[in-house]
Length: 110
Image (cartoon, rainbow, N blue to C red; front, side, top):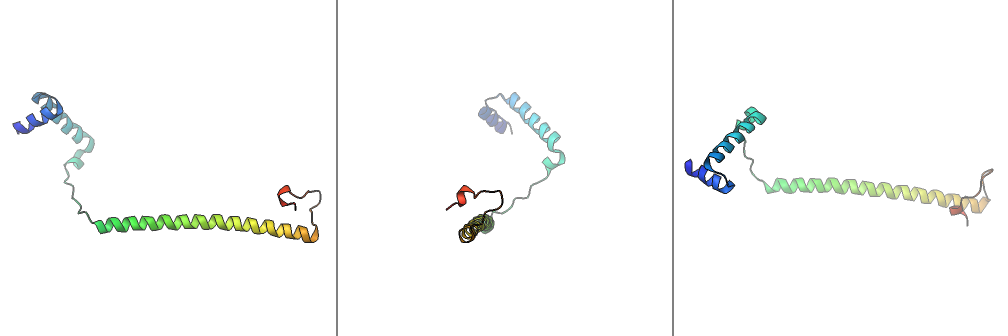
């Protein structure tokens, strides 16, 4: 244990006494912050590349689904706007309709 403390002290640029004090401070801080959680053994999870790929794939599907929905919504809105303007232009050409006390909007004029 002495050698381990000496190695750690050397790596951290401290004397052995300073390193021991630091180890104790770290342990006390860890205990005061985390309490019993700090002493609970953590179960190591096994790495499964298939789960990572599945997660990445599902995230990609979610992203693409939302992106496609946004594109479709934007396109639908633009198509509806264009159709409305085209219909209004057509009606204005056929019937020379202009609402009372209003002028034809400049963007709809011939």
